[in-house]
Length: 308
Image (cartoon, rainbow, N blue to C red):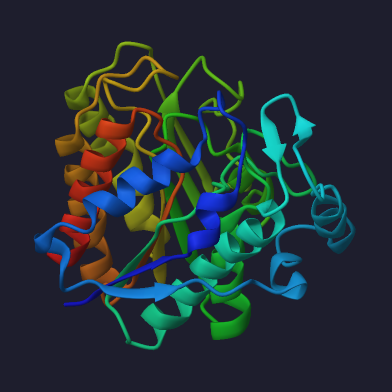
């Protein structure tokens, strides 16, 4: 089986400022980990830019143009207190969305069994018409809608195990019964959404985890709540918002997972995709802010993709 990795040097030029947690060193750590000899068989490609039309499947065109228009010619600009853009941020955001689109194309064409998009800025907090939480455009939602519109897939599922609720993906998916989101996240925590009673049209599954939850708690909740709903939905493609900030070492949250827990969840989703979707799975990097934990967790995640 083959795993594709999509990334681009411009992701390292999305400059958020020296003290910002979503910094270029995050992606450098991930890419360094994936340079190890065990990952030599990965297919590697550079991400192309998504078009405005492709991004506009998830966000109003006026909003897309407003975000790109806010990118400064020099220095930094803030879209909100947490979300910073700099001169190369627009291209980075276009290529982050483009990476997920290209991953969907490659997987559905049979060029790879699955794919990992090593991108920044992340995307899962970007709502329909609101950039927030370090995110400009919702990369995973754009990819899911591309799978639907360009490849005529009927049903696409996203599983989000970032420590923060995937509020942006929920806002885009919740009116559409043919899109499914399961988000398992710490609560209370930013952005303050993600309670169990947020169900969309029956297509949203939120699994809040209390601060201090362990990897065993995560595995139990995943088996109890996420996998059964995913089985019932029976998607044509599985996508993952792969955030690794629920790691015990991460400074932005209070869960106590280890890289083995992310590997386990990946293995479960790979197995599900193998049974129901011909193995077709696309993953995109979201959060993770301790560099060592992020690198080890992303490597564990990709290792399981390669084992599919």
